[in-house]
Each structure stands twice: as structure tokens, then as C-alpha cells.
Image 1 (tube, rainbow, N blue to C red):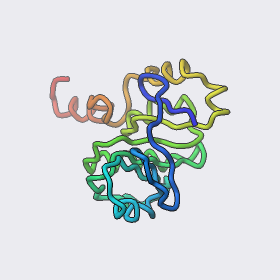
Image 2 (image 1 turned 180 degrees about the vertical axis):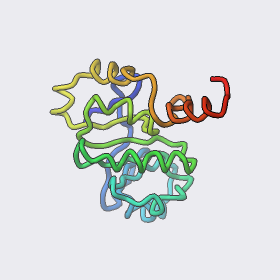
Image 3 (image 1 turned 135 degrees about the vertical axis):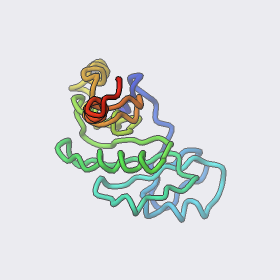
Image 4 (image 1 turned 30 degrees about the vertical axis):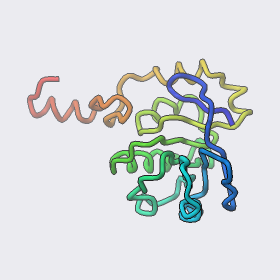
Length: 170
């Protein structure tokens, strides 16, 4: 599946692995349930975990130090629970790569970045309909968000309103 980030298209170094077949692989992406088995094999590899967007934050948190990527799977573009999970993971201090996986649309890219996602892995048929230029334009379409952005650290509209009420200068 094509990978989009703030720079455009990206190459995915992670290989999806199921059933513990990690021999000779330096970057593996495994289901959360297989994390302990992959870790037990050892080796010097970067590990990513894949979780459903319905996963409770407490199931993932605290994120183990050896996890470099968390891929949150969206079943459809209309199911936004993965955005909340990403925000929870960032608020809890996860500094690795956050990836949204599934049929998100370009219009959601800016919001995904603001919630803390670094990249979006979309189906090939969607990438054919929405080229990378559309994704990059969508990422820049909205300069302000309601909540503070994890991407820029800039205060959101809500924070600006609170500061204005308190008499603080922006």
C-alpha cells in the first residue's frame, strides 16, 4: 500500500509479518498479540505493532521501549476512533512513528498529522484516485485546528480562546 507523509510519498522499510517469521528482517510490523513472541526471538531489529482503531489505550500503554512504530488500522474513512487513539498515545509520551493504515482520504490528512500521525498507509486504488499532490495540498489546507497540534506544537483554537479570556497575549 502506498505510504504518504508530510514530504509526499515514502518508502516503507517495515515488513508485515505474522506467525513469527522474522528471520533476516531488520524492520518488522506484527500484530500486537505477537509482540512478546517477536521480542523473545531477540536480535537487533526495529519492531512495529499493528493495532485496531478500537484498541483501548491501556492495552498499548505504556509503550515498550523496543517498539518504534505503531500502526493504527482504520476499517473505513468514516470511523475516526483511530484519531483519538493516536492523540492518547502522543499525550502519553510515545515519540516513535505513528501510522494510520486504511482507506483514509486526503481531506483527513491534515487532521491526522495534527493528532500525531506521521504517515498514512492507503490502499493502492485510493492512491490512484488521489495522487500525492492532493494529499500535500490537503495537509496545508487548514492552518488552525481546534485542539493543539502534535505536529507543530502550536496552540489550537480552544487554547487561543482560553488565553484570550485570561487576558494573555497571543
